[in-house]
Amino acid sequence: MAISISLATPRTITRTAELLRAGRLVAFPTETVYGLGADATNEHAVAEIFAAKGRPHFNPLIVHVPGLSEAEALALFDDRARKLVAQFWPGPLTLVLPRRSDSGLSLLAGAGLDTVAIRAPAHEVAQALLRRAGRPIAAPSANRSGRVSPTEAIHVVEELGDRVGAILDGGRTLVGLESTVLDLSGETPVLLRPGGVTSEQLTEFLGPIAAPATGRPKSPGMLASHYAPSLPLRLDAISAQPGEALLAFGPKAPSGFAEVLWLSPTGDLAEAAANLFAMLRRLDRPAFNGIAVMPIPEQGLGRAINDRLRRAAAAR
Ligand code: TXA
Ligand code: MG
Image 1: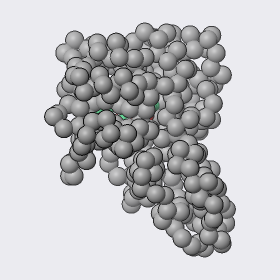
Image 2: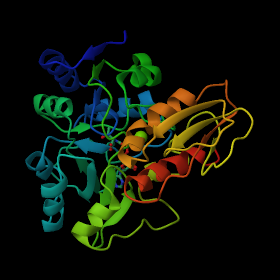
Image 3: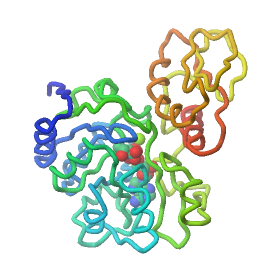
Image 4: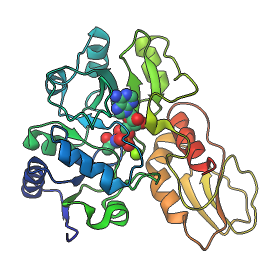
């Protein structure tokens, strides 16, 4: 299969939607990261996602739809869920809800759970593609299992090469971190994954939110070391170690590093989130002994950034 990367235009979007309807895998931009999409009602197409990513386990996948009406055909929405949708969709918020028995979704997409994770992405290319495909699209991040999520089309080429039928290029993704995953299948909302919508925003809206129970993760994608560069990662760095590269945050950086990339020189968390994965990728080279990261404040988007960094630093 030849790699086909094309600038997203009405024509290429229509052609890509046809590939999806024919059961092929395609990569497309969302506001968070690039997704590896397949028709979520086609068991074989969904199985191809796991094969292409080299996922060792059948982690449940997020199902993408244009908006609430399409989502209501797949899952049971209560008032709480509708309120959140009115505020945050389209956008980087994934809701885990009871799956409708007549959803038509591939069981593999939900990994056998009786819930489904759904979101409506806020990216005009993703929106156009979903509308043209006319069916729900299962899409994990378009990287090989255990690696950093792609935030540019070229990253998808590096990750999945010829495993995809098409790659739609919609430029760099704006948010740069995956969506927030909120479990609404029980009485108390549970934050399964911090992401593009902050827990402060959610709490303001919902009141108290529970952290996931420790022990066996309900969201299998939350296993430590889910996101990882090849080089060792050292967090909260305040001085250099020999041969290390640095991801800096804020106006001043310690000296002595072999290379420095700035997540955000002004200390802006949204800018840092948007740069995180691309910069980790750029520094992940054998020329360095490791990647050090300056402290990032644990607030707002900083929580999601630190979550991804801790996973990337976890022992493998
Ligand atoms: O921003 C994003 O969400 C990106 C873009 C492409 O939309 N997608 C993404 O998908 O990050 P993925 O497959 O890499 O992450 C899906 C997350 C995992 O943590 C998974 O365990 C969780 O959602 N998940 C999916 N279905 C679930 C369910 N029924 N119950 C609990 N967790 C679920
Ligand atoms: Mg992922």
